[in-house]
Image (tube, rainbow, N blue to C red):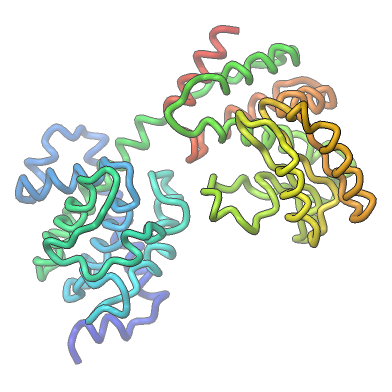
Length: 383
């Protein structure tokens, strides 16, 4: 029986455990490199300089392919006879790399707060529909350099029958990811007992900064932080739980979710919030919300925006919301993000707990980054 068949005969759970061990070993070695300084990394990694440079360039590109490379390299290091260019089970001598990406690589990156994609690095259509990653394969990516880098890295590793090159490449990728993670670590200021009007001003200032990406996440974090305060203090939440704040998703993949923030009771959603950034609430938003919760157990649904309600449609919005409540029993509440925060802050002893929750989430959330964290400290220094 050949080695590939033996690898295929090992059950998936066992293979996932093997990959976890490979990733952990590479990660621990990379941590030591980062702690001691990476000035001599290229000289000491044991790879040809071109191979090392291209591996690091791929690792530093903000693209799902660097995560996919982790999965394929770990598989090669784990089982050198596997042709990791054949990343799908329907390829000759192929294997279901996406399965191991979702069950091993993604959880590992989450555990160590390293950059990652949302659910799988194979969600990108470029890779999902790609054939075997042979030398010269054309993968259309943005930025353009990522496709050729990815193909080169995988082929460099695949040409080695010992798995040693793959292990060294894993080390380089983890060094780059650790450095990216560490650069974005910023200890956030946590103001205490600010007046509500000052908190309102602080949030508005933080959300008005012109960020490259991620600005729509901040109002979600603010409302989630309010719910974190309320869930243990307000009687109507006594038997209910706040679901974790999910990663931001693209519009087409968001279909089927109840809201950005969800409160559940016995596993069923009973209250939800949909949040708009820099876009006023319109009638179409209300109609979409009604369609979304019509068959759900939700009794209260908030539509909140950082810029409030479309004045011209306000009367129709109220009319449709009241009509739906009479028919369904679900109350549709349309309001502004900042107005909602101010209202609920009045129910709390002071604003300290809310500000702590907000800072905690901004400090750790994967959908905001260094620019948002630095901006928060700067905004706090200005108040």
